[in-house]
Amino acid sequence: MGVLSGIRVVEFEAIGPAPFGTMLLADMGAEVVRIDRPAAPEELIPKTAGSHVDITGRNRSSVTLDLKNPQSVEAALALIERADVLIEGYRPGTMERLGLGPDVALARNPKLVYARMTGWGQSGPLAQRAGHDLNYIALSGVLSAIGPAGGRPLPPLNLVGDYGGGGMLLAMGVLAALLHVQRGGNGQVVDAAMTEGAAQLGSVIYGLLAGGSWKEQRGSNLLDGGAPWYDTYRTLDGHYMAIGPLEPRFYAELLNKLDLDPAHLPKQHDRSGWPQLREAFMQAFLSHTRAHWQEVFADSDACVAPVLGMAEAAHHPHNQARGSFIEVSGVVQPVPAPRFLATPSALPRPAPARGEHGLSALREWGFAAAELTQLRELGLGFHGDL
Image (cartoon, rainbow, N blue to C red; front, side, top):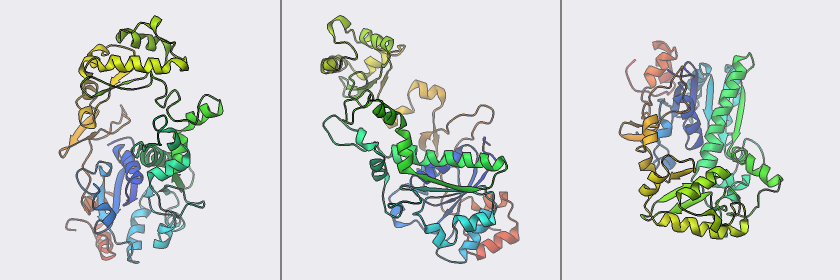
C-alpha cells in the first residue's frame, strides 16, 4: 500500500542518512529488502539499528550476507537484478571493491537506480576522508551561521547534514531517477553528498548574503535569533515560547497579546532598538507560565508557539487531531509524511531483526524455492523454512 507500491529497493546496511532516505521511500510503499551483515558491526552496537526503537529502520525486510565472502556477491546481484533501486552509504570505492559497483550492477540491471549516500561526494580531494554530519555542514558554510551572537557555531543536532541535506536529498534523487526510467530512460547513478545537500538547504541565506541582507555574524540577522521578534523566550515555569511575527500585522498582534504599547517601544526594524525590544519581550514572557501563554495565543495570528519537548509533541491537540504521531511496538514516532489522499501510506512496521521477514519478501519478489535454496548456499541468510 502506498504511492510507491511495487517499487523494489535493495538497501545495504548503513547508519544515518541512507536509512532515513530509505525509510521515506518505504513509508510511501516501496518494498525494501535490507542486506544486513550477519552480526552487528561494533560501531552499530550502541545505536538503535536493528531494534524496535530504530525508527529509521521501519517498514523493511531483512536478509543477511557476509559481503567479504566472494560467493556472496552472486547472492547480492540476484537481488539487484530484481530491484528498481539500490541504496548504499559506504565510503567511495567500497562497493566497487566488493564487486557490486555501478558498472557491474547496471550491466546486470540496465534500468536500476543506483543511489549513493556520502558526506563529501563520490569525487573530490576529501572523498576518501572520514567525517560526520558536523564536518559536512561545516564545509557547506551553513554551520557558520548557526549559534548565538558572540558565541561559537552550535550543532543543529544532525538534522541539516544527515537528514535534511542527506537522506531527503537521497530520496528526492531516487524519485527523480525513477521518473527518468519510467519515461524510457536508462538507469543511472545518484551521487548524493551531504555537504552539497546542506548547502542547498542554505540557498535562501546565500541569496540574502549576495543581496546584502545577511551579515556573516551569528545572531545578528533576521532568522538567526538576532531579531528579538524571531527568537525563543523563557517563561515563569522554566519552559519556552517561540515567536516569529515577521509581518507587521502579526507583529502588532504580538504586542497586543503581550500588553505592550507600541508607542513606548522602538520600531520593529530599528536595529538600534532591538536590545530594548528583547528586554521587553523577555520580561513579558517571564511574568507567566507557558500554559498561560499557550492560552493567550491559542487563537492568535501572532506566530507564537510553545517549545515542546520531544516527549510532549505527540500530546499536543493539533498533532493529536492530525494523527501526526503513532505508537509502534511501544515506540512513539512520527507518522509517514507527506500524506497522499488517494493512496495513503500504511501504518509503519517496526524495524526488522537481522534476517527477519526476509523469506516472505523474497517470495514476493518472485524467487522460487529452488532459487531460495541456491541463495542460501551462496550465503544469504533469512528466517524460516523453505
